[in-house]
Structure formats: structure tokens, C-alpha cells
Amino acid sequence: MRKFVMMCATLLVLAACSGSGTGNGDGSGEGKPITVGFSQVGAESEWRTANTASVKAALAPPEFRLKFSDAQQKQENQIKALRSFIAQRVDVIAFSPVVESGWETVLREAKAAGIPVVLTDRAVKVSDDSLYVTFIGSDFVEEGRNAGRWLVEDSQGKSGPIRVVELQGSVGSAPAIDRMKGFREIVDADGRFRVVRSQSGDFTRAKGKEVMEAFLKSEGRNIDVLFAHNDDMAIGAIQAIEEAGLKPGQDIRIVSIDGVRGAFEAMKAGKLNATIECNPLFGEQLAQLIRDVAANRPVPRRVEVEEGVFTADQAAAELPNRKY
Ligand code: GZL
Image (cartoon, rainbow, N blue to C red; front, side):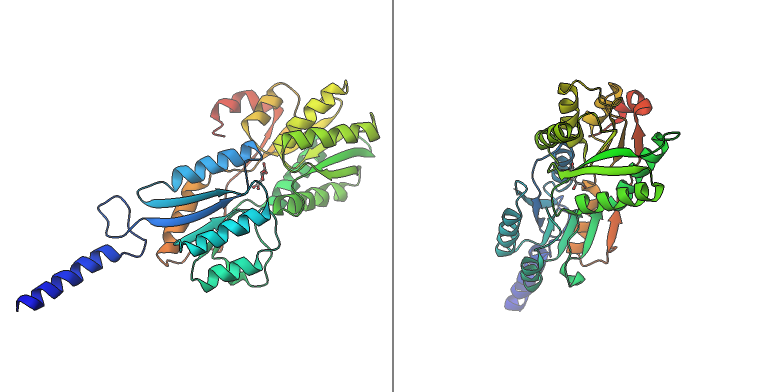
């Protein structure tokens, strides 16, 4: 009889400790923390910094055990990080893929290891959609369309050709590919706009300034508009425009994407004309997706974040409300 009681007690203790990574983590629940491997693109922009802060704040102990890796905008570093998460047998992998292609092999390794993958911010191109469970982020094509719509509106009464230069995001990245696609769709339909130069500034201020300097050198005063795929490159370009003796926001109309604090400050100073919001603060939504995925609950295939369009006349009033 005594042996039977001991065995039941042991089984009860084992059941309480085993958990499946779905405990509510506050000590009152019955499971262990959910271990998440997160590979971040890098720290290239104000947007990325805000996104990292939001993810880290949401995937916090005791509910989560976060293994965070900064890839410094290099795909090979992300692939290394994903392989390390697989070797450590994390419960869930989440990552923002720096570029769209080249993920098939490592995602098959994660699938073979039985580790679910959540895409955040940027998408991937793979032949087998079962290689990731869900995606949370923005509609970059719509962001590009919104930039184009603002420019068409801003150019009311002007005849063409209106000469546009474009600072693209990182080559091969989903935001760069899709923002360009959406913008061209709108401005090409209007017919008055000519994109005379288009080159990557890799989403950074420094590179944005450098490429804008090259545009100014080759096009001189024949630039009417700058479309930048993110605010950081636009802010770098603003410096180049001023150093060339021109007035950003007046001699050259400027529209960019993200809606970071620096953009609102530039709009308030009259140097940037509009920014299309791309919300990086989805950490809590990501945490809920990871809870559901870890517990094998069904999740939507795609979760999009809410975002708006902000123009210079709104900047002063909106600036105190900005959270990133
Ligand atoms: C967009 C994100 C982009 C931002 C840039 O969701 O991937 O990367 O627009 C950032 O600021 O570098």
C-alpha cells in the first residue's frame, strides 16, 4: 500500500513540474516559462530600436525566457542565430528576416526539430508556407501607396514632369521591395512623375545622406521630390540638401515612412513634409501570438498592425503623443 501511495505522489509531482512551456509564468501557473529565440535585424534605425524595446518589454520573465540576437543587418548572422536556437531546443523561434529569400534550409531544420516559427515585421519568400506559423507586421505595399497618394495630393495644380529621387531600403528586404511597388503604382497611374534616380540607403541616416549627396551631384537643382523608404534615410538626406544650399521641405518636397520621433521633429521644423506611419510597437501582440503558438492554439496566418499618415501641419500637436 505504502509503495502505491509513493508512486502516485511521484507521478503527481512529475506532472506538476513537466509543463509544456505554456505556464502563465507568474509562479501560480503549472508550467515552465516559454523559451523564445528572437533574431532581430539589427539596430539600424529609430524604428528598429523602438521595435526591439517593445519586443523585449513584452517577452519578459517570469512568463518568458528570451534569447535575443542582433544580426547587424547580416543574413548569415540570423541563420547562425536560428541554428543556435534550434540546438538549444527553444519552445518558439521568432525573427524579422533581413531579406526575403534564402531561408528555406534553416526553416526546414526548425520544422524538423518541431520548433514553430513566427515571422515579425518582415516576410519571407518560401516554397512551403508551413515553414512558419504566422506573420505579424505591416502592409508595406499600402505604405508605399500612401506615400504616393500624399505626393499626388501635394502636387495638385502642378504640371509634369515632376522629378522624383528615391532612397530605397535594404536591397532584397520586403519593405524596400513592397514600398517601391506601392509608390510606383500610384505615381505611375497619375502620369506626371518621373523617378529619375533610385538607390539603396540601407535604412540608415549615414547612407541616406551619402546617396542623397550623389543624387544632388548628378541632378543638381533638377530634383523636385524625395521619397525615402524610411525616416532615418530622409533625415540623413535633409542634411545633404541643406549642405547643398537648398531648403528641404520647400525646394525639395520630402515624404518618408515610419513615423519616428525624428520625423515629427523634422516636420515641425518644416524640413520634412509627410511621414507614413509604420508601427514598431507590436510586442504585446507578438507575446500573445507566442503564448497561443506554444500552447498549440490556432492563430491567424497574418496579423497586421494599425497605422496612419501624418503631415507637417499635424506634427507639433502629435509630437507629445508619439511613443517611439
Ligand atoms: C519596417 C522595418 C523597416 C523600417 C526601417 O517594418 O522593417 O526596417 O521601415 C527599419 O526603419 O530599418
